Length: 118
Image (tube, rainbow, N blue to C red; front, side, top):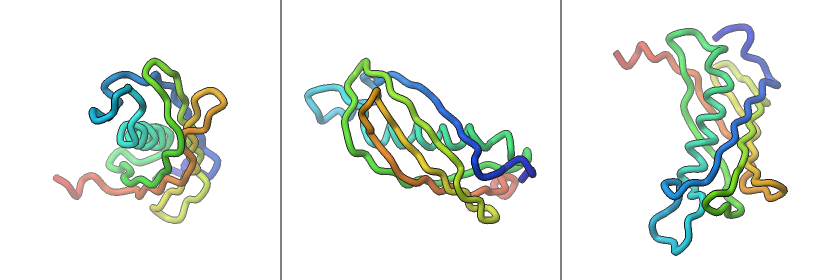
């Protein structure tokens, strides 16, 4: 890990709900929990990846899903690194669609050495 991996790093990403983000068992297209978690995880990963060594990445997830966002609705994912304990990174996460909070939570990721997979 690089010295630049510090508490306070923040990353943001904006998305629009699409039909393929929706669970197939509902009569309307809304943002599914798995799709939202994938985007939260991706936002956290993108926010720290440049601060890791070339042979490192992060893995892991924990979030809530408290409200719906419909197809075509824009939403934003915000992730802020709040704890760095050796290789364990903890983020505060928030997903919003306008004034509606879709998700808040913590997202824990571990820095791992990818060369172990070769």
